[in-house]
Amino acid sequence: MSGVGRYRSWLVAAVAAVLLAGLAVVATPQARDVVDPQPQVTTLDAAGRPVPPEAPATTAEAPRAAAVSELMRRRAEAILRRDETTFLATLDPNADSAFATAQRNLFVNLAGVPLSSWRYHLEPAEALGTSGLTSYAPDAEELFAPRVELSYALGGGDAVATTRPMGYLFARYGDSWYLTSDSALEAQGRRTWRGPWDFGPCLVLTTNSGIVLGHRANQALAQRVAKELDAAVRAVSEVWGREWSQRVVVVLPETTRELQAMVGSEFAVDSIAAVALADRVDHEQQLVEGARIVFNPKTATRLSASALRVVLRHEITHVAARAATVDGAPMWLLEGFADYVGYRGSGIAPTEAAPDLTRRVRAENGQLDLPADADFRSGGQKLDVAYQSSWSLTTHIAERHGEATLVELYRRLARAGQTDTAGQDRMLREVLGVDRARLVAGWREFLRKTYG
Image 1: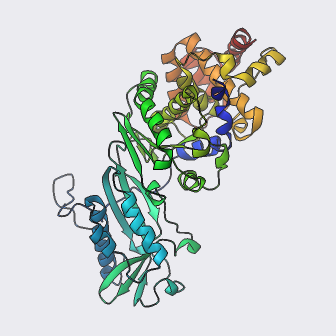
Image 2: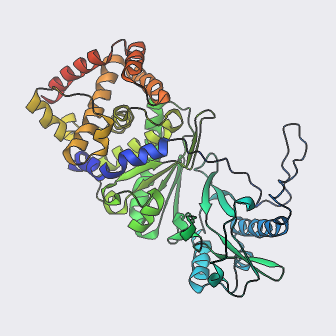
Image 3: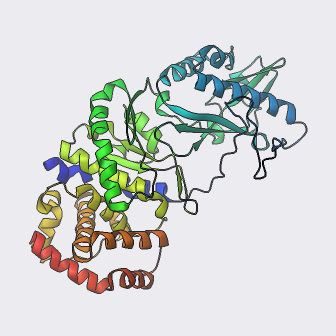
C-alpha cells in the first residue's frame, strides 16, 4: 500500500509541463493524405465529385514531388500489406548500412502492430536545402528534402489518425528516387519522430477497451496493465460519462531513451511514473489525436497492484477529459479530479494515500490554501502536498455537492482555460453556490475532520 502514497513522487518532474503541453492545442495543420496506402481510392467532395490532387508549389518541383510521393505511397502500402520486398525496394541501395539495418528492423518490429492506417504527406514547397548533404548519397544525381509527415492510427486504440514529423532525405539515381536517410536533416532542425517500433520488436496486448504496446522485456508489466485496462476505462466513464472514445493506447517503453522519445528529452524522466499525452486537440470537433499513456520502465514495475490501478485510472481520466480541457485551466482541478477518479472505490484510507497532507493538516490545523499552478512545477514535499491537497479538495466537493456537480465544475472551469479570480469565483458560485472563500473554508473543515 505504501507504493500508492509514493507514486506521485515518481510523477513530479514532468507532470505540469507534460500535461500542459499535451492539453494545449498544438497549432499544426491537419494532415492531408496525398500519399494513400490504399490503391485506386479517389477523394470526393461534399457533392460526391472527385477532388483533383493538389498541385505542387512550382512547375519545377512537380516531377520530383510526384516521384517521391509515389515512392512513399509504395512504402506505406508495403507496411500495411506486410510486403517486405517492396518496402526494402524503396530504400537507397547505397545508403549507410546502419540506416538500412534500422529500416529493416523497423519493418520487422511492426509485425503484429494493428495499423488501421499508415500514410505519408509531402510538402515540396517546404523543402530544405541539400547542398551540404552530399555525403549521405555521394553518387546521387539529386537530393530532395521536402517536409514529410506520417499519419497513422493504431487499430483498436485510435479513433482518428495522428500526424508526426519525419525528417526524410531522398536521393535520385537516373529516373529512380529512394529514401536515403532519416537523420540527415537534424542539423537543420527537422527530426524524425520515433515510435515504439524504432526501438525493438513490439509486443501488443489487446483488450475490449484498447491496446497495450510494449516489448518482450516488459511483458509482465504489459500483462498487468492489460488486465486492469477495461475496468479502468469503465471506472473513468462511470464518473466522466461516455462522451469520449473509451479507447486507450498504453505504451510501455523498454529504455529511458525510448521513454524520452515518447515524452520529450527535456523532461526529467527518472521522476515520471506515467504521463498522458496527446499530439493534437481539436476542442471544437471534440477530437484528440495521438492520445497515449506512457509508463516509465524504471518506476512502473515498482508499483503495487493498488498503485498501478490508481495511476492508470488517473491517466485515463486525463485522456477522457482531454477534449474538454483548455490550456491554462487550474491545475488543482485537473490533477485533483484525475486523482479523485483514480482513488475512487480503492478502499485506500485518505491518511495513507496523502501522508504529506496529513502532516501539514495536523501541524497547521488545516489552514491550507488552494495549491497554485506553480506548486505543480516544484519538487519534493511541496509538490506532493499540492497533489494531495487537490485530491482532498475534489473529494470534498464530491461529498458536499455530489459527484455530478464535481464533473460539471470540471467541465466549466477546464473549458474556460485561463481565467482570473473573478471569473473563477463566478463559475464556482454558478455551479457550487459558493465563492472561493466559502469553498476554502468548507474544505479546511473537511481537512480537519478527515486528516486531523
